[in-house]
Length: 429
Ligand code: NAP
Ligand code: HSE
Image (cartoon, rainbow, N blue to C red):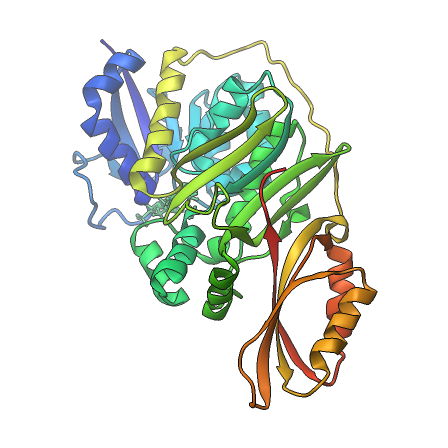
């Protein structure tokens, strides 16, 4: 059997998962890849840290040169995260004619041009299946299985940490902080969980999916983003009352050659196909003009699910016999126009704290009506206190109409605060 040496940059959650899979499924992997894989080196920050896998002596190192300058290492697996020094190491590896596998959505989404450009120039393979939706093979599905289609729309739950938090808040009334701590303990969250909680991680993943599915460059900064930190247990309770669940959705739709791109918490009906995607599971709903509606579902984070995608990429490189392709076919991607959020359409949930005085409901309803927003339902529960909570759910309207309404409602002396505005989506069109 042929032998191949690979190296890992990182031995955290994902790196550990990769090692475990390569050990546990050794026979199957050897047969499928046609190679005996040896992990020759693993780069870490702290060589003395206790690890969750047994690694032979001399393999763990703090010196990147031991990997990047070693000609016998043919594949470098970047599972360290961040952009600096990860990007530099990946570029150096590719310039040394090593193939690269990465799980790093931040690097691919924000520095993909340079990384993919280098891979093409050097004729090496750069694979990043694990960067989106953990164990779900969404990138191969778009790149291979669905290439006969024009993709018109993708709606997904593509962050495991926030889905875990929202599930725990919804099903177990757990508070936000406890749920986040649990997600961190399970190894789902990014090193800085702000990336998960505030929707950046989902934005990077949506950018990657969009560039592949719509053949366009996407600047992550232009994707509309809202995280889940403003979702309170009271919003979850109202969602239940209306027959909704709250999910952090990543959405891209192409309408008349313009892309609508957004990541935000969304109320969806309990009958929506994404409503029962819970815990760290992810799901991607996709509409192709030939295949129609398609849904992929699986673990979106964690050591083994993510490791599954990483090892799959390693095997795919080995199946191609680590070929260095000298004839490079460079396809330059151009950017598509991105829709202004003011022009997107949705239903809206609006929660406000108001003075319990006669006429307040009429004043708010009048403002909504004057801005072409029609109300589907209103709930005001408590009475007799100075301030009460009032909740509106609107019919579908333009975001611009809602923004104008909110600005006017906030000026009313009877309104103390607009506490939250959450979009309500009723399904893939
Ligand atoms: P992690 O647990 O924080 O592990 C990072 C590893 O990289 C650690 O072993 C760390 O060394 C090493 N490292 C970090 N910076 C380094 C540096 N400058 N020099 C040398 N070693 C360095 O991270 P993770 O959760 O495995 O995530 C890794 C990557 O996979 C990230 O890009 C993440 O976005 C992506 N990803 C993660 C998941 C998931 O479920 N966790 C899923 C999909 C994709 P020490 O151990 O010595 O600190
Ligand atoms: N932090 C990420 C998540 C890891 O929670 O989805 C998987 O990309």
